[in-house]
Image (cartoon, rainbow, N blue to C red; front, side, top):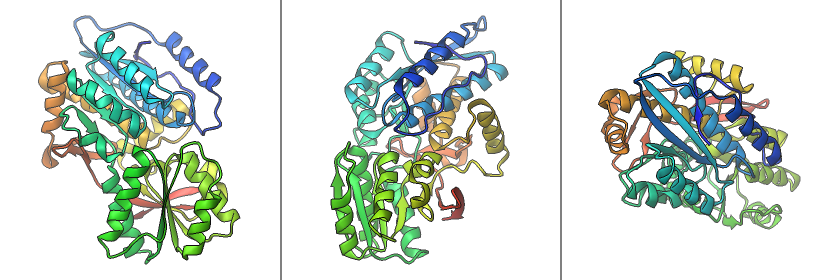
Length: 391
């Protein structure tokens, strides 16, 4: 399906793994019916695919991807009639074979000039060989280390990598919170393994070893075995990395078992879904915070105001990252005068610290591997809200 955004059309917000697939599909259909196909005569046309979960347990990520991208497209349609950006969302339901099929369709049938996705690390990784082969720049929020270690010149991570965020989190936890015995629980997929191993490496650099280092399988709902080990280890903090729903469930079960450890979270927990699902159990948690919707930066205030009016909630980091990704694609077309994938890729790769893309995430540029470079703060959950507590 193709969306040519010339106005702002609300999309159903993803809130948790309890959302109903039918409601999301209905919302997506409504958007297609509401969208207009009017384009500006003589304008350059750019097709941007979006691959991510619009249904299933990870739908909050995929819907945020589309929401953020669509909002930027709608704004650009009002301010620049010389470039028409066409969004083509594809639901992969967090199943990597579907991500691969969607990517192939976008490249071969839709002739996509760029692709946003996937919404989670294993599926983003599965897409890399296709986007590299066909020279289509891929922008992902997946934090798995392997995504940008495949030798592809066409993949860009618009989120803090596992290494970047865990190092920042470990620095804060050890240096400012004076935590010494940190337990690590992680999912046994690319996302969880990358974040878990990166946190272990960050602690090792400080002369520490995790008090517990245990995996869980996606789909598990009973974490009593892992949490019993955490309890007996005498841990003073717990870093659980996986889906936001699992992280919240682990927090609730930990409190039910009488664990009073400080909870630490990666950027995947830096959204209101974590608070909604975790409730009082996540109060006091400290998380890596890549985007602060309460920032006083003018560009952020404008983005948040428009987003909230459109979708009825504050934007999260996934919204902001895809909003900026579309902005970078537009900037590439304006600067080069070309819409092909190689030209877009070359412009994005040329961004430097002194000449980064100025977006709502800050001044963005990428290293040689395609990892975004920008500052990362910490936030504490206080009275059911994120409060920025610095670095």
